[in-house]
Every structure is written in C-alpha cells, then in structure tokens.
Image (cartoon, rainbow, N blue to C red):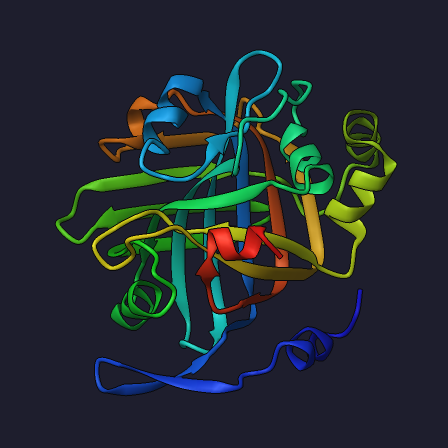
Length: 283
C-alpha cells in the first residue's frame, strides 16, 4: 500500500469550522486506529422501512435479504482527537437494482462492481461530545453520545456501547484472528471475482460514498466521498464462537444475520465534505 502520508497529502486539511466555540479542521482525518466491519443482511422489509424517507433503495441479494453492517472503530489518532465510533449502515442505490448473487462476501461484490452503491450511515454513536457535534453539525450525520469499551487481545476484540442513558446499544466479541487464512481469499475471489477482490482488499485505499439520513439538521440526503486504507486486514467468516447482542430498539428487530468480520489495523481514513446526493449523481 501507499505510505500513510499519501492519502492525507491528496486530501489535506484545508479549512476550519467553528463547533461549540472550538475551531476544528476539515475534512475529517483519522491517522491511526483499528476498525471492525461486521457485514451481513437484514430483512428486506426492514431495510425498506429504514430507508422510507430517503432517496434510496436497499441493495438485496438473490434470497431477498438486504445488505447491512455494523462498524466498531477505535480511532487512536484523529483530527478530532482519540474517540470510539459505532455505526449501523445500510447499502443502497439511487434506484432499484437487480439482486446480487447471495454469498458470504456479497457486500464486497456490491462495493466493487456496482457503481451506484452507497453506504447509508443510518445510526451513529461516538464516545466524545466533540466527535458527536462535529458529525452532526458539519457532516450532517445523526450522531449521538455513547459510553463505550473496546479491548483487543490475541486476535479477539470485545466491545460494548451504551446509550447516554445507560441502555445497551450493542455488545459482542469477535475473533477474526491475527493472520489471514489464504483459503478464505480464494472463496471470496470465486464469489466476487478477481477484480472485485483486488479492489476490496488489495487496493491502495477503498473509496466508498457515504450518505446521511434526513434529520432535523439535514433536510436532504447528502453524500460524502470517503477513503480508507490499512496496513493490515484480516477477513474471516462470522463463526460459532463469535457473538453479537443488539440492544437498540430499532436494530434489534431487523433480524441482522452476520456473515463475516473484517479487522483493519493501522487505519487511515478521510471523510470529505458532503454535498447534495442529486448533485453528485448528475456529475
């Protein structure tokens, strides 16, 4: 992969905004940390309900399930200072698309080969007020404050996020391991194809357009280009030893079925300033 500096040289900090009386840099940078990507599917009807107010249609597989994911981040060095993040994402497009062949790694197929794929940041929590306010006021995301713990040992990660009132949002443990199992990459290649596998796992960085949801502070859908790179990735199936408990009142009822967990280490991340979704689509 390219050096860490190359991503941030391409998208440097080039502005400041005032949030709660504090001058903060833009765009948003993460210079180091770890990231868990727990990908799977939910009921299609639930996905349609969650996206009912958005200008988007959920992406589905050939069994009629809709793609979704949880992201658990421990950002140790970022332009907003160290912080944790929990995100629930849906994968969608601006118009209904043909289903993607079902499979453990079908999400990567959508990200690599469907040019109209967008990741909808539907639920977002951070453990610092600065990150919450920045995400709400500058990035127009529906961010909320949470209490969180994330611990890692021997290829295993344990995590727990609680709402500001102490209610469980999510907890779990996953063990993707410390080294990539080569046979799993071959399985992914058979499902996704060589080009999709290279773009998803071996590219210098992964670009994903992220869309907000309509809220009081964002009356329209906005999209932001994001770029992620990591020095190490480990991809594994979600195994019988892994556990995830969803306590959130909405997401507990969508029948989330995890397929895989991807662990990214020494993460670099850039979230550019958002723009109207329709403007971006018309370029």
